[in-house]
Length: 320
Image (cartoon, rainbow, N blue to C red; front, side, top):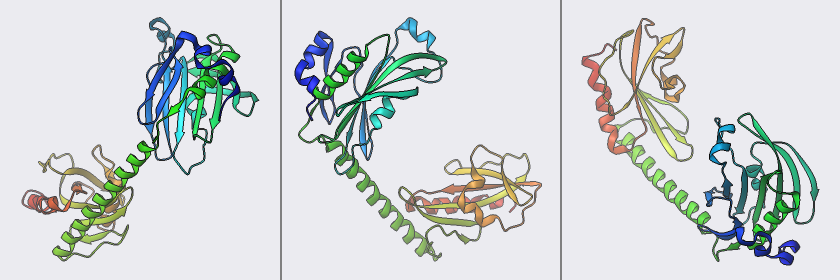
């Protein structure tokens, strides 16, 4: 796509000496207002978000202080990976904290809107302009205070940025790197799962079906396929009177719980009572006057013998 305004005025004519050419690592080059900081890129599976932001001056920052980070000016560039529709995440990112957005006009190339930018109890009327280039799989959006730039200038800034963008010959390399990393991680996960399953078979224990908890004495395990294959183990170590502080093995994630009225109540910081393998112990009768100690792990097969040994070791100290 070639924008008419960009062809007529040219990037340099719009910005003059206030334009800075910036590198977008892995994607290309772009000319942006010199008031904006260096590119901040975040690559996702579907698209990459590249942000250029202008912060407030030292004195201004006091008025805008709060839990959220405010930006006086923002230019957002999104590059969509091949085979995906060019959505408009740039508008969402640039329009963060923009309320009451009202779109004033839309040509074939640029959409112009205004909004109230509200952050940390402060607010300013702002322009929000956006453009898409499906052929290059690029979307851009620009937001700035109306007291800083006119509507026409906001459109010029966005138009010039879109025109100046020069993608690398292989701007899809960052997406390919994500695919390669995910593929490598998946292969490693499948290998680790196979090793754990072989360890379970060697122990003579039942092979776990997906999301079905298996119980072997005071130990339970469940097999998952979430982001990566995983087999979680939990074991009942023993019990002590309420309030006691037994010395447990620090190598493993430990939890202390109490069963009250048929439900587990967490006595520590971890969210143990929602941990799926704990379902294996729901049918047992436990003394409400005692607290029960558990270990859990999802480590590789090379550590499972140590885990089982740690589960058995406290038998001499703790009452089951």
